[in-house]
Image (tube, rainbow, N blue to C red; front, side, top):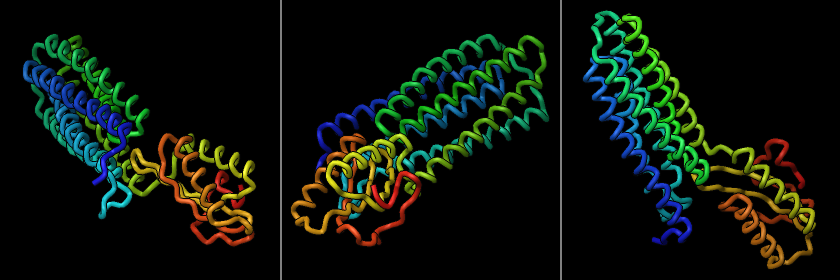
Length: 314
């Protein structure tokens, strides 16, 4: 089995280090939040701790998905394993939904049979420390995910940042309990946390499912692709039709038809196709391009054409 190029091996190591950072931070914040929940007896703190347990499980699954997605193409997976990252995002989204249901159930139960909370000062201190750790790690993961086009890294980072806002909500709610003595605020905070997590899980699952359906490249990347094709067509006297794109995790697939003068030789057309493939790869950072060559005037039959950016003649 061929190995990844040195540049991609370096990138893969960086991505895996990010996931190990997420795992380490999740373990530490689990301890902090569990202590806060145990000391105070607060269902609000406990709901926050449950979400962090989900963070940890999701990070472990994410690390596995990153390792799998880095495997090169083989006989059974001709286009590689990049979509494994979307499986990770689906698992994370599903786990978030499970956590939300558990939190809402616990909140309703405590609302029916309220119990006093104790030592809120200690619980608030531990929660603040956990929030700071999650914020730093989440910001780093989201930036890394965008830079290296990793769905797993970005999803995990956004999950951590969501956890930060959840913790902030819990801290505010518990502070109000300490100031007012209204014990009913504890389960209400838990219910609000559960609703927020439920919405987050839904968005993450929706995004992962849409990605599995092979969405076109993001608008910014499409603009770069179109600019390159327009310039190439003008400089070389060719036209492009049926330009189709798909994003698979960190991979990019482009299929297009290049129409050329009928008198061109196969070798000459092939040389231009090679230039297109390398040019697109340079424009997008990395991409696999399939170029089909046709003579001018031939009716293109390879795939549909969509949107203003994909016209019959470029």
